[in-house]
Structures are given as C-alpha cells and as structure tokens.
Amino acid sequence: MVARAGPGGRTVLPVVRASGQLAVRRTGPVTVHLVATAFGPLGGDDAEVRLVVEPGAVLRVRSVAAAVVLPARGDSPPSAQRVLADVDGDLDLQLEPTVVAARAHHVATVTVRLGAGGELTLSEQVLLGRTGEQPGRWTGTTRVLRDGRPLLHTTLDLGPGAPTWAPPMAPRAYASTTRVRPGPGVGTATGVDAVRLPLPGGWVSTAWGDALDRVARADADLHPGSRPAAQPVLAGVPS
Amino acid sequence: MSLTALLALADSRLPAGGHAHSGGVEQAISAGLVTDPVSLAGFLRRRVGTAGSVAAGLAAAACAVVGRAVGGGAVAAGAAVPPSVAAALADLDAEADARTPSPAQRAASRQQGRGLLRVGRRAWPHPAWDALPTQPHHAVALGVAAAAAGARPADAAAAAAYLSMSGPATAAQRLLALDPITVAAVTARLSPLVDEVAGAAARAAAGPFGGLDLLPASADPLLDLLAELHVSRKDRFFAS
Image 1 (cartoon, each protein chain N blue to C red):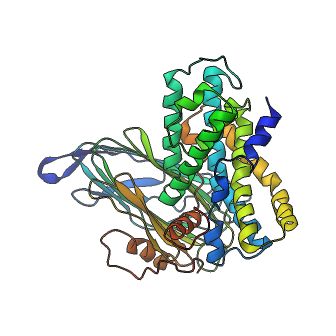
Image 2: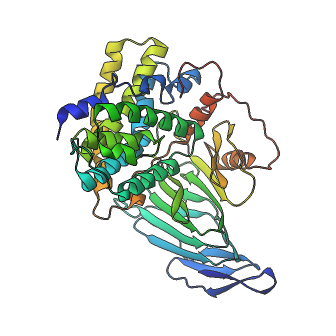
Image 3: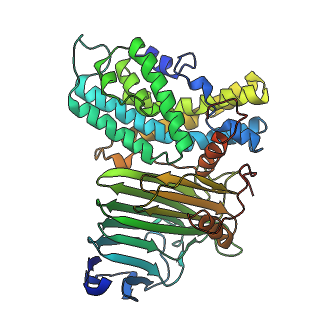
C-alpha cells in the first residue's frame, strides 16, 4: 500500500493491493482497515504487509477485529506476519489485539524505516489463549530505524516454550506503544508492571499482566499527556 | 586462539568495574522477586536469555569486525586499523543502544565498557582500541578485547553470556548472604544454557547474510522496569 499526500490534507492511495488472507478497505480520509478474509491466521500461514508513506502523507491503519491465531492440525508450525514500512510521512499503525490460541505460535515482525521527516505511532496488543484455554506463544520483534540508524530493536518472546516466559513474568496479556515524532523529549515513567522508556525523538511504553483491558489501560496511562495515573515509584513488581 | 585470553576476559578479577553492578538483581531482591537460590536461578535464566544473548551477539560481531580487518592477537607496533573498523564498531554501538532502551541499563553498560577499555588497552595493546567510542557499550568493548587478546568471536560470545550470569550471581550472594557453594552450584547448572545462548548468538553474528538486524535482540521489560526503579533510589549498594 502506498500513501501519497493529496489535496486538502487527504491522503491518496495510488497503490493498494491485497491478496490471500487480507483485504484493505478505505474507511476515512487518511484511514484504511485491514480485513481478514478467512479464519486465522493458521499455523504455517505467512502474511506480509508492505507500506510506503510518502512525504506529507498521513496513513492510519486499523483492523476490524481481533486476529485469532489458531494452530494447524497435529504438530503446528508457527504462523508469521511481517510488516515492512518506509515512512517519510506519518504512519499510525494500531491493529486490534492478536489472540494466540493454545498450541499456536505466532511470529510477528514490524520493521519501520523512517526518513528524515517520518513520524510513527505503533501499538500492539497481545492476548495468549482464548477464555478458558492454555496460552499460545507469541514472538514479536520491533525494529525502527531513522535514516538507516537503529532507534529501537527488541524481540519479546511470550508463552509456553519461550525461554524467558517464567515467573515472575509470565503474563497472558501484553501491550506496547512506540511513538517517534518531533517534539519535546520525554523521560522515563514507571507503573505497576508497566514502563515507558525514552527513544531519540520519541518513547516506547510497555505493560503486561493477566487481563488485556487492564494492561492496555496501564500502557495508555504511561503515554505523555494522559491523565496522571497512580504511579507509586517503588511499587511491588509482580501482580 | 588463546584459551587463557578467554579465561581472563570472563574472570571477575579483571578490574573493569563489573563488581559495582548487580545486573538488576539488587532491585529484584528489593521487590521480593529474588529471595533464595531457586528464585535466583530463575532470575539468572531470564538474564542470560535476554541481556546475555544480546551482549553475546554484539561481542561476537565486534570481535569479528576487528579480526577480519587486522587479525586478532598481537599485531605489529604502529599498525593501524582502517577507518571502516571504527565505522563498523560505531554501528554495533548503535545497535546496542537500540537493544537497550532503558537509560539506566545503557549507562551501566557504557560505564563497564569504559572500564574494560581502560584495562584492556594496557593488558592487550592493539590498535583497535582506538577505533572504539570513548564510552562504548560493554559488549562492543568486550568483542574488541577478545580480538586484541587473540580470542575468537565464539569466545567473545561465551564470555559475554557468562558475565551476564556471573555478575548478578555474585551480587546476589553478597546481598542475600547466600552460601557461596550453593550459588556456585546454581551457576554451574546454568552452564548448558550459557553455552546454548552463546552458541546461537555467535552463529547469528557469523551468519552468511551477516545483517546487523539478525543479531539477537531479546528484550525483558521486567528487567527494564527494575533498572529504572533502581536508578531512582538513594539507598542502593550497586550502580545498577
């Protein structure tokens, strides 16, 4: 998908192509929604999303519903989703939560290459296991570059089989937001099972716990400008 | 390669300043997450699997950069390293920053990198030391030290992974007054994990595609949170 600055602040999309499990629907002046055309993803599925946001263009990408990752029959191989974005405008990528069912393993990779004027808002929400079932596994990598220089590169591996998914941090729910844009720098902030860290020209916040709604709120509470939440500086860490 | 060089790099006697850092275990103890040998083992396992894995990949890559350009070990007096080495080490230093978003952990890594630079320069003279930034990340400095001492990238990875465990283990032993023999047993049992993490990181650093994006980037938001809570305290024994 290519987003180009159009007349009157509108974003035109000279290239929109989708096939396989995903369709793209235009839903607003600068907004598109990704629509899953089938159940899944299923173990072994491989989806790739390629985004280009040209200078001056704004592109808001959403999805219509949570993605439920299901295992294939038998010994399920991982499913993969790779997002690669080249951003000289403003990309706001916030999809609905990914729910990883028991026995499934989803590998999600987001790579954003920002040009000199590029701006980014990226949020991810993950829930391991549907109600009443065992958690699945999610391995998520975020790599953000500015002019080829890495600003952030982290891989988080959650769920059964992940080497570091063990008490005191074996959460079922996880939320994270990355924002890179010009403006005053922000420092570190901490919450209970949540932390915000500064990036060059931005920040990244992360929260984890058992229930996704609470975790998403804990993440949002750390966003600069959000109403000040109770943030005891030396809170006990495990919930 | 020099086996003694590897032993020296992983020796806590090397005065690079590592003894002042607890690798997050001081805050984990304050938060009640580490209380005994069992919970210490769990903490060390996640530290080796995250910070240790990242450090091992960077150290192996830095060692390989120097080795490819000028060869490791003793080099002729007056030998210079090509500018590409400084650029490659600066790239690795930036990759270390990207994998260490916690300012407290960044500062701890750079303090220990500067300490290692100071002792390494005297212990293993090599022109590659001049190609490092003045306050390099510890893992990048460790890779240069390994090359200067005549060790291989896989050795640099092993030393980095081992240090990610031995530092916090020693700190926990002191803070909780644990039996040293018990702590030795805990770390000995983690040896296979350290080997596995170091091996995987060294393979990633040596991969046929060799991209910096392929170096391990395992994050641990819990360790980030602990590091930021720790640095805001006034009553801490350790710098990190």
